[in-house]
Image 1 (cartoon, rainbow, N blue to C red):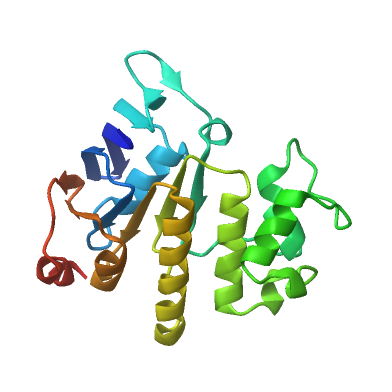
Image 2: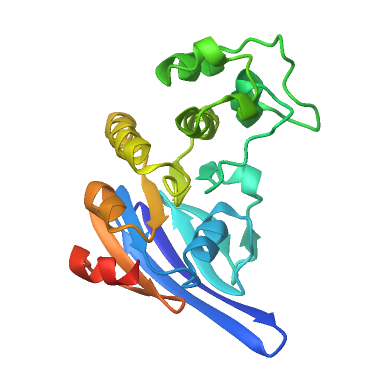
Length: 233
């Protein structure tokens, strides 16, 4: 089983509350969760990544238990071996490209040295055609280059799963088409299981071996027609 997720989480703000009740069991290596803003997509992904703690339930990836409320298991985000790609890429502005990619291998409080060399970092710099800009900073990069840096940083530690939060939302339409194609080819080559959340039905069409609808905190299990998904955008 690639993904076995059964979690509940309640968030409260004043008189308002939001209830996440997400269940997903799948052997698919390419899952797309589609739904409107505020439906709980990012909340679900952050729970899998270990960035928030569910109130109850369990999370298992590739047969490994990452969270189990009954057993008292709650692995730290760094110990889960899952890569999370934030919507805004979350690159460190004070680190250059090489240092950003190498941060995925860093331990402790120190940033990677500018002069540090690592075979895995060099591999992903070459794989994403970033070697020529390795000493540039995020503010000096194009949108596509920033996304490639974020992906390289996510993959450098060889994660057991890839979690993608609206990965193309910050790109212009033409670049979005190119980066979808690149990510599609990369995932097929690496065979890293992934969950991608989006409100764009085109993402579901390209990546959705299994497409799920998230409505008001609950996942609707089963394939979702793209015409239905388009209504949620």
